[in-house]
Image (tube, rainbow, N blue to C red):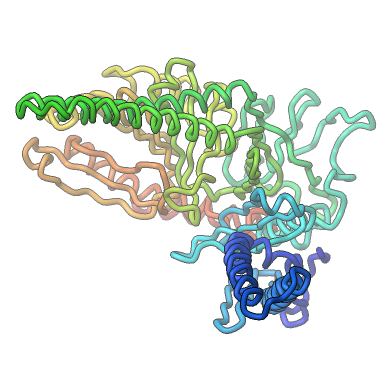
Length: 573
């Protein structure tokens, strides 16, 4: 199915089709219902025919089989028509989808708006070796374009092609997805040991792992990932890896971490027990109210009804616990995070598997979350906001359960460097401890009435690259928003602010699970933050926003853009 990626005119690029049985896979549940109804109606019809015309069992069976055969022919015809009209093509700047017979539907997704690429394999599709390819873009309500269904190998190849085109690296044969993905040109010694790779005037020693797009990050984000013993920043005016004599190696995906099965099962059990405990608490409250009312009315029938209801609810609680635990294990089984030239890739799933790829620079906000039960085991969860995923998409969880070292490892590829000394210690202390001199601006004492539990902990701080917002007391939440991802800032006064003489602020990002608002803080400090973020976000976006992260022309314009942003900042100062 896959074809080499070219730069030919879009009108010359042929249309492709999904797998021939994909319409059947998409509507298999409807087919089962139709088959059930057809079977029932057929038996009733045959019974009437047998009784009316006194047909033999053989004749009645032939009529039944004939009706089923005709129905299957009609269904096959409808599936074939649907498959013929479901076609797509990938051009150098967009993915186009045409579908529908009576109601035609056409989708056009620009690759420079691409935010993430997912490969999902539902259980029924896995039986046929098929996968669903979903493309997420920052395009409002219809932000997802899905290709259902493709062979697993074709889906992987199409993902590579789409990310290759979206990166703007069409002129770089070393990154062409039609060549060997294992990287025949990848830097390394004959025995597979990494060798020193030149990066401008810096050299990465053999002991240092080769970060997949360290050259891009070094020149563009000034980001030195953990584990790299040498800095990757370049001298001013030098754009590494883009001279005629230099070839940028294509790097195979590098595994960052894999969650052990024991931890996945433990987290599922903890989550399931938490859901069951919450249900039991509601049952106790309702039961107590019923007992109190029955005692007031001297109702002798209330106790037997309450006992019966309690037994029934106990069954429901156990069912909720088991279902919640299994859902967690099913979604997080074999969770693996990898890094490649295309970005962060997350794979997981037991019955239904999924693979999510987030290209560089597409993460809008990051949230480290520690539920109450996770605090016992020192576990954390990481969620991200990505344009196109929305509020409830499970793909926003990029680390379902991990130790603090796992958190640091994921942050090294999800977030820009904090730009301060001891960033790891800063994040650890922000999650675990609360003190008056921890660097965070806290809620003033006069406003803690409105936040009696978490008031002292709720606060914010800034670094050269990030805005950090801390929430909650029993459960712990730390939100991290790169300055350039803040789209709009608002300062306002709620009723509680007016009563306590404080103000609140909100920072707009695309819809997602990360909370980006600050409540009940000192007006002077929060207004100062408002103007600071408005200025730094504008300059950071000029420098760091990239739609095509591997395009030569974008990297070559980096120095010009940086100079303009710096000059604009100097003029404003």
